[in-house]
Length: 111
Ligand SMILES: [Zn+2]
Image (cartoon, rainbow, N blue to C red; front, side):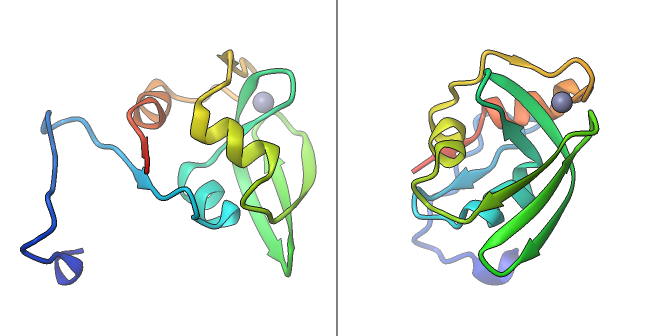
């Protein structure tokens, strides 16, 4: 968004065709999930989020592989930590997360 850009802000783009996200550690988990559309399961699989329905402090998440889960919003949740630290082992085969999405996530900076 051009309107949000200030002259003091450094806009780093090492590679023009490399799109990446920047998130702040204090970002709301749901905002993060909505943008990134990826869910880290406890088993180390990275799932694709098909839809997310926010209901107050909870969100109903439907994954591409058909799993449905209910998540409580918390900045210090396991999911938030896993996403920030990129602890996922591999992408879920059934979710068929496209490579560009994984690349984009891999290039995400958490500040
Ligand atoms: Zn999946």
